[in-house]
Image (cartoon, rainbow, N blue to C red):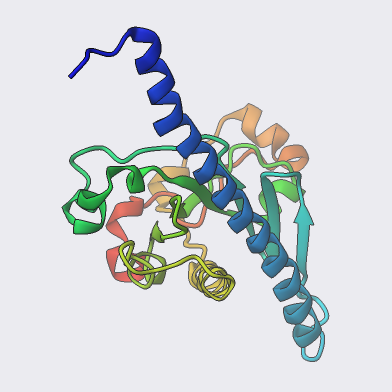
Length: 230
């Protein structure tokens, strides 16, 4: 077999890998746009329903550009963000155990859509010290196979990468599970010892920017709440 020149190797790599990444990017962007459309629709549906029993509840969709949108559900703010790069899984990841990847290693290249959960008031009152959480990550490959890495139902309902296809119906299901998770993920009071001391500066600015840190699990280890949302 004739040895390939560096130039030939570069061309081969561009053909095999870089073109592949463009394919994965296109699939991910299409999925993200479908997710946007579903989020906008479900916001309208939920708003129409909640108006029947409580007009104080705000359900709102906001498009923040090509790669980000927000979905406010009452006091929660969900931020969906598509990463513009394509990733491969580390060889130690359990995903490599499947025959699906052993048959074609390029199936391991995935786009990522991150899902963040914040308190809406953190943004309304510019509480820049407040914390949020990554509650889920949607991975999708060149064949539109997908799985979700996340907490509670997000982690075990959508983890069949070998068989699951990211159809519009699947995207809607993931979105509904995400909303259900975040509104059941309650705000816990922090341990007293974590807030018993406060600086003069924090107290003086509290009325302006609410600098006293707030988070749904502030004062608790996120990993430790297994009984609640793992």
